[in-house]
Length: 334
Ligand SMILES: [Mn+2]
Image 1 (cartoon, protein in one colour):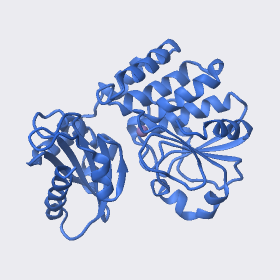
Image 2 (image 1 turned 45 degrees about the horizontal axis):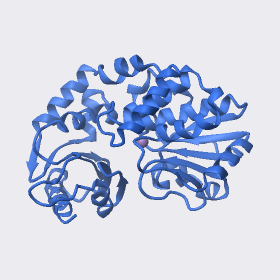
Image 3 (image 1 turned 180 degrees about the vertical axis):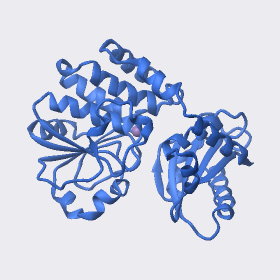
Image 4 (image 1 turned 30 degrees about the horizontal axis):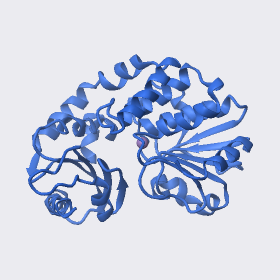
C-alpha cells in the first residue's frame, strides 16, 4: 500500500460533498468500486455523486443503483474527487477534456491497481499486486469502518473481485483473494447474483457475435487473435462489453501464450491483450509481461492483461498483421 494511506483517510473523512469517478467504458470492478465506496460514505452522511465518462454496458442493468452513475459531469463545488480503478487522466475521456483546470485545483484521492501513475497531485492508494480495485477498497475500508458494512456493500465488492478475476480464474494471490471473499460472503455478499447475471447469462445475439469472432480467429506464432469493427455491433444490438465475451472464450484455446481482441472504434484500433500465466517455454524462461508490450504500444495494463490503442492507418484488416508481428517481437525480447 502507498505511504499516503493515512492522509487519504483524513482527506476522505473531512470531505462532505464528494464526486466519485469511474473510467471510460466502466467495467464491473470500476462500477462496483464506485457504488461500494459511495454507499460506505453515504452512511457517514456525506453527499455523494457518481460520474462515468460514458454509459455503462447494459449487462450491468441488473445492478442496484446503476442509474445513479451519470455521464454528464456537473463541475459543481465538490470538497473531494475520488477516482477508482483509474490510471491516467486520459482514461476519463471527455470529462477531463472540457475543463482540465477544475481537476488541477481539487483535492483528489485515487484507488487503483494498475501499473503507472495518474494525476500529479492526487493521493494515490494503489496496489498493483491486487486483482481488483474492489479488493483494495475492501481491505482499506473494512479496517476503518467495519460497522458500516451491510449485504449490499459486501455484494458490490464481491462483484468487483469476481469480475476482475474472471470469477476466480486469473488471480495470482489466491490466499489474499479468497480470504477477502470469505469475509465478504460472511458479511452477506450475494454470490448467486453474480453467477446468475454475469456468468451464466448471455443474450442470443452475443452468442451469434461470438460465432463471428470465432470464424475470424487466426494464429501467428504465440498469439491467437480475432477482430471486429464497432459498426458490426449495431447489427447484433450488443455493446463492447458483451462483445468482450469472445476474448474470454478464446483464452481457453490450448496452445498460444497470448490472445488478442482487436477492435476498430472510430479512427482508432483498440487492442485487448491477455497472456496465459505460464512459462514462455521453448523461447525463454521469463514470463510474458502484457504491460511492457502495452507500454511499447502506448497504453496501460497489468502483467497478464493490457490494453492499447493505435491510430487507424489505411485499411483496418490490413493493419492488424503488422501489429501482431510487432507484439510477437516484443514478447520474444522480454
Ligand atoms: Mn480493475
